[in-house]
Image: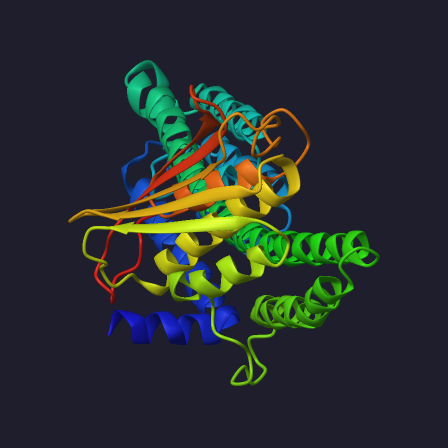
Length: 396
């Protein structure tokens, strides 16, 4: 029933306003009649009713011009007191409503300045009431206190509304920041994928082309064999690039996109590296466990990036990949040859993104990452990834 009444009130605001003013005028007139019967000297009736009517008639403009309405209501109440009426809360109805509306709709300083001015007017009015010498509490303290109480209630409601608006704005900002953070994370993820695809395949293609050019005069058969495998490298790059960029088109049909690579493609990765003269030995320890798609992709990309950096930055032509399956962790270790000159990757000291990309992938999967020079020579990349069931997603 309460909701039904609120809907009706919202649908007929003018009728509600007129009813409210009429009821307030009736209460004010009743207070005029009641006060007149108890006051000595019997104040004039019709001027009291007229002043009450003027004060109530100004109230419909309290939302647009609250200070003018408050001034009108205050003057009417002071005039009633000057006529000899005892200024009671019922007689002050238009003033209290006007003061409350002013406190709700004006700043704090304006609220309290207007409240103090109205209270001062009530104090001055109390001097003209015949019972002033007998009851200063009724004629001075009581009217001023009601004005200040009305101002305090309006100010409280204004603060509550401002607080609710601030909370709503803060919640909107949080939602926007969360959405922005997710967009940035998605961009970072796609950027890592693009970096891994482009860096790996283009590095291998560049190495194949350089090797073929070097062998073209002395070993043409080997050069032609390497050149024949070059389209396979570029085709693989295009397939993975299409699959990665296809993530940006979620509304399109992605049935023809290649699936995300995983450790099952590790033999093909090793064969591709062998075409540029990098001999990779793969060792698997423990019983292989099924990996979730995200964790499988993470492990493959880390191995791929590490081998790519061996091809780009290491003087050695050999590398070793070790996969160790424990009950709750998969450990990936990629090392290049010993005593071979330059290290595996220069991301820590140069401007590349190899180490950064691998570290971010491992951290995003809830794992650990370490890369550095080995005491016996060479460079090592070690990564520990927590194992999950095939239907689980890695922790972030």
